[in-house]
Structure formats: structure tokens, C-alpha cells
Image (cartoon, rainbow, N blue to C red; front, side, top):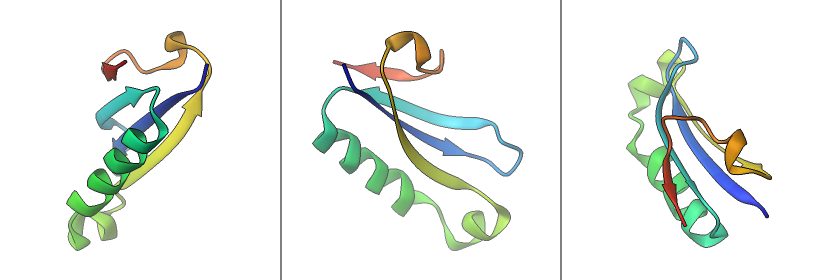
Amino acid sequence: MIIWVNEQIDPSGIIRACIACCDERQAQECHDSFESNLTPEQKQEGWVAQIRTVESWDEVPVNALKLD
């Protein structure tokens, strides 16, 4: 199983928002939203939006919103 994990990470490396799901289209839409919601100032400070895949729900950060 492939699980898509979207994370919005602050400059100190703390995950500030995280959503995980099994639907690639939904995951890409979420990533696009995370990316567009970062202001130019946040990006300059080092905020990032990243998308990655994992193979198990055990690998998803505990604080994630998990969508089936």
C-alpha cells in the first residue's frame, strides 16, 4: 500500500500540519494547497511544504490527519 504524506514544516524542522491519505490525486491537491498557503515571507524564512510516500500507517507522523 502507498500512503501519501503531506507536511508543512517550519524553519526549525517542526511539522506544523500533516495530512496522510491513500489517494494520489487527493494528496497532490493537498500538497498544492499547503504550498500555495505559504506566504513569500514564510518561504524566505525556511518554511516548506513537502509530499512523500510511505508503505505503512505506522510510518505516518502521529499528529497527522489520516484520510482513507
